[in-house]
Image 1 (cartoon, rainbow, N blue to C red):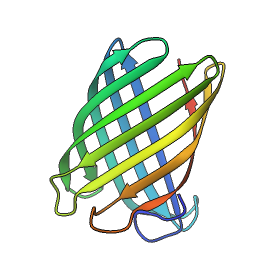
Image 2: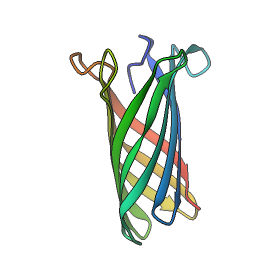
Image 3: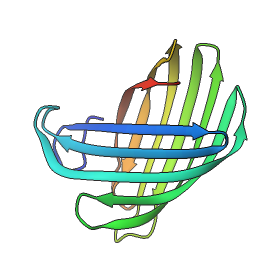
Length: 149
């Protein structure tokens, strides 16, 4: 993303998604800074558990619930949904995560196309994150590498 959580010009994140049958576990962390080598101390963590309402070879629709936290003690309930479509080596992914019960409710949405080669995936799309639903979002291009086993 071209803008960040703390006002610097760079945002880096990591996300783990694990599916066993219809049960899903999603863990993510975002951190910002002036460059990838000078990241700020503040982080935003999210841990979600969910259930796949649709879970087959071509599509997976998950409903998620859990908590989000900053690197301080600000922990809040979080809900979300994720839709993933797959066709051979191509796919699409869309997700929305809402943290409604904080002093400034937050929303994180993303949509991406997926190119798959063996167990590796390249996600290219767009992400927008509202750190306060009354303010402008942090938004921009989104690129991610994945490993699907």
